[in-house]
Amino acid sequence: MEGLERLRRKAKNAADLHAVVGIMKSISSSNIHHYEQAVQSLQEYSRTIEMGL
Image (cartoon, rainbow, N blue to C red; front, side, top):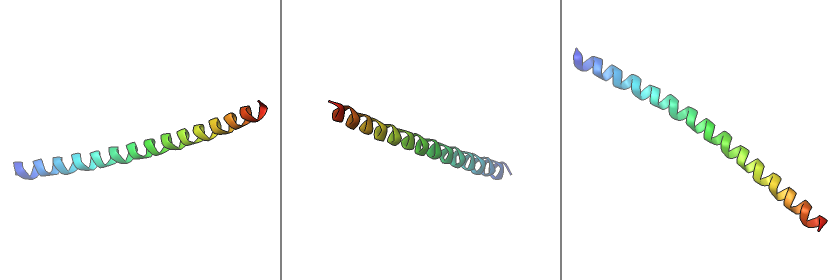
């Protein structure tokens, strides 16, 4: 029975790890989106400054 309980704990730990990885992927995707928006804004700002000069 001890082996069965150990397998259940391992399965639960794997499921928990899978959930954490999913959350981490969502956060990184959101961060990438924000950085892409920042780059676009900086490019527009740079173009505006160049046109002004």
